[in-house]
Picture 1 (cartoon, rainbow, N blue to C red):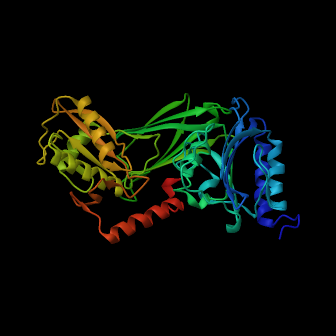
Picture 2 (tube, rainbow, N blue to C red):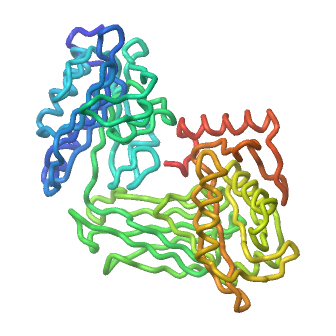
Picture 3 (cartoon, one colour):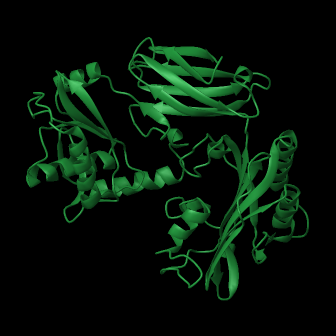
Length: 441
């Protein structure tokens, strides 16, 4: 019951937010509040609200308010002090009072979660540029808004084919995939000290590029752990930065790595990355480089569940088999197609790599749903050009070959998924959305 008293768990989270604000007050500026509301029987309800603490030197964006008959989306800035009253109104009065929006009746609880309390930079869910601590207010079911159906357009407002796209565009969260956040208020408290900007890994070294803002490169230290095929084959390294880019030689080719960026003063984690090559869903700012020696070794081993050869993509039948492989890789754990290599492993090459790459992208855009955008590189093997088409495990499974079906990989061949395999794909998708796989966060 809302009687002005704050439940102990809510109070604990609120105090943690207040303490964090106090610790970082020197580099916080305004707050940015992105809100999506829907009208249910003439009553406004919260679809999702996202609150971000901006850096003091960050230029405030122009306020934006988009309203349709039953959908309201806003993006406003406010002062940091307003965050305390906003949070207090939530837990003691059951009211979401956001600048630029009507007051919304809402009841629920403040919470923090293991997967999000130490959010990495450029995360997969909120796409936030800096590492942050993330907290939530979860609404009770009766107070949640549900995305209205249909297209949204007025004379003065842009056209959105559906409400999910409008929310994703303005609020920056895909509710169709992360439906567990429906009706919630999300608090993102960035660290703004330093972040990992890019990680490059080859067979022989790992290169780490950081970006320092409130800290200097001398204020941070990196920690690296990596392992090979056997558990006893592990290494741990300290990474000392004298400039923003540092390369560390590897003693063997790893299949699992963790990289952390720590504050020398506090010892706290500033940012991190997990790279699991056995289950390659690498963050977009993690670049896995394949050398010519590695490609030659892949060719020598032949086709398997992760490797496919294609001599050329001229005939329609060959193009269809190529699409089947790409779709199958997207529905499983990813894979690589080598174009310019025959089925028996002979490197025949391609005459015009740029033209072939353009053809591949056009084929995939027209044949795959959702669209698959692989990483494509040209490599010279035995003085002949081939294309290395790297396909990651897809984020929007199941992937379909238009008018043919959902394909999966079975050994070195592709086939249409069985009903049980489709159920498994959907189950894995639900697990990913719930955050049960550690490397997704």
